[in-house]
Image (cartoon, rainbow, N blue to C red; front, side, top):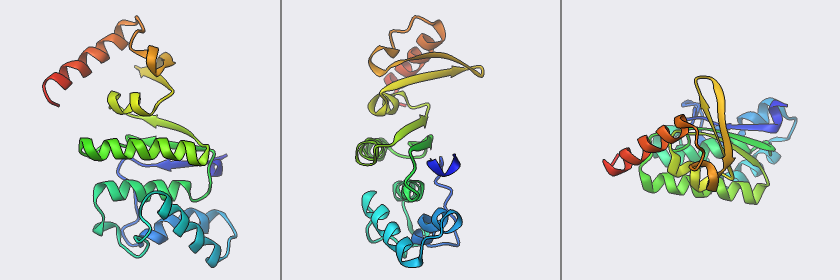
Length: 173
C-alpha cells in the first residue's frame, strides 16, 4: 500500500547530502529493481514534469523554497503513486509561489490521474485545488462537502474558522 502513495512533506525533507537527482531517485532505489539507466530516465522525466529539467546535479542548499517543494513533489511522483499526500504545501511560501504550487498540484492531478490529499490551514489554497474539503476539529471529522458548498455548512466551528480566515485576510495576513 505504501508504494501506491507519495508524500510531499511540509519543508520538503530533502536529504542535504544528496543531489536533487539522488533525492528524486531515492524511493526507486529503495523499493524497485530498476536499472540505473531506467532510474536516471525517470528522474529526468519527473524533474521536467515539475519544471526543473536542469536541476538534477544541484544540491538542496542551492534551491529556493519553491524549488525544494517541486523537488519534493518529483520525488513523491517518481514511483507513479495513485495517491499523493501533501503536508502544508504552501507553508513558508509567498502568495505568488503558493499559487504556483497550487497550479502544480492541479496539473499533477490532471496529468497523472492521481488523487491528492492536502493537509492545509490555507483556505484560499484549499479552495483553489480541492474538489471536496473536510475539516477535522478536536480529532474528529466534523464537516465534508464540495468546495462550493463548504462555507455554507452551518456548523459553528466551520463558520468560526471562516470568520477567522476572513479577519486575517482583512488584516493583510
